[in-house]
Amino acid sequence: MQTQVWLAVLSLVGVVLGGGLSYLVQTTVQRRNERNERRRLAAERVEKRREEQLELLRQFIRVAQQAERAAEDPSKKKPSWKAGALDVVDELWVCERMIHVLFAPALHGLARAYVKALDHVVWQEPGDDSLWDYLRGPKVAFLDAAREELSRPLDLKGS
Image (tube, rainbow, N blue to C red; front, top):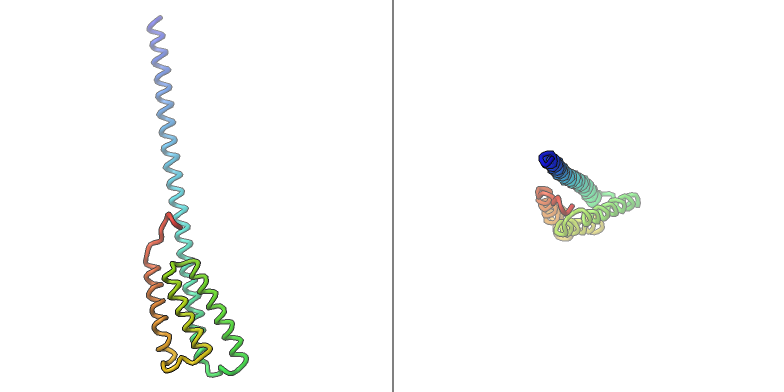
């Protein structure tokens, strides 16, 4: 009888140990899967942020080019020019504010300086400098900083 009790107790211990080990393995695998899913979602967020940034930069550069064309347009005195220039400059300022939202403060500061320079040449003469000389500094500084910003990896945790 004592042997049967020991066998029953050992069987019960084996079942408990097996169940415990099975539980540990399942929870470990589940935690690993949850961690992997969080990493995957974070990587997707980073990729979407990068796409948003690229699209915003394309739009900003496109609108800045339109502002440059408006600044050199010989029909500056016509009312139709003024309406078109207002639309371009408004869109440029909107893009600048979106750069403030989606990029680091350093890039936003350079975008703002470039927009101010563009705004100035659209509505006023640049003075002694040619239009291109006046814009070259802020434009190149912004484009260089944008390239550097995009080459930097985004933080998976902070995004």
